[in-house]
Image (cartoon, rainbow, N blue to C red; front, side, top):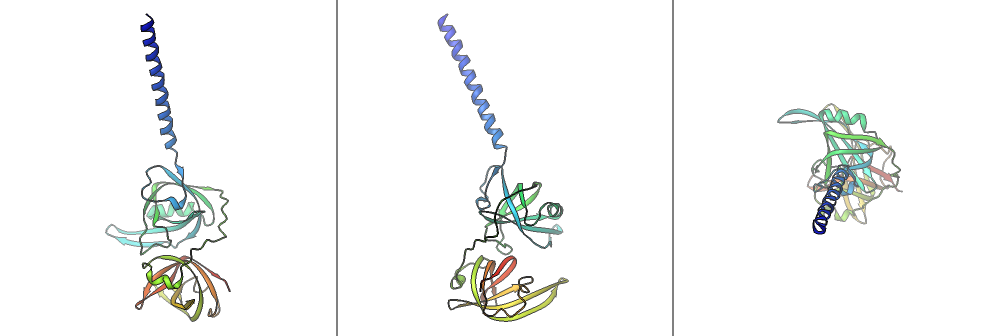
Length: 256
């Protein structure tokens, strides 16, 4: 009888242990159903769990149209920034209009259910190797963030290194303007453009630089002799040589 009672007690103990383990497993599964907050710098294509980001919208790009085998469409883009870095968010067609109503410049947002894809070298405007894409399941909620994004972090590249970089690299530079060739304007696809071509110098290394649109008209006098810092300029190719060009999210600061 004692042996039978002991056996029953052991069986009951095993059932309780099994039940507790199952409860723990269920609790673990429930916990993993909640998106994990990650930094923008951590975003990559190997993430295999639910995630979310908290970020400030630091740039809104003009809406563009595109054409492919399925017809024409529209695309909207934003730069999202947290304390670890920045990444571009892209939305197509209907989602582009939905996101325009939700994403506000200089405000904080929580974003979930986004897709991750490699950033195209030809179209990227940030150093981040990936970009985010909105889906029909994407959720955006405005939140309060205490980030101080006024203090820009630069990762300067010297002009003498430009020829070693891949084309379309996005970099930061600090240069002195050797010559300002002035502003030219024109029309393309019914849009007016402005362009300002500069000859810049850094410790004897010389390079051409083109300022486009808002950056071209930022300074209303000849810029020769000015020392400037630029965040997010693109390494391009023109007339047989590498050159630097501004893009919509380029930040230009006059140092001296």
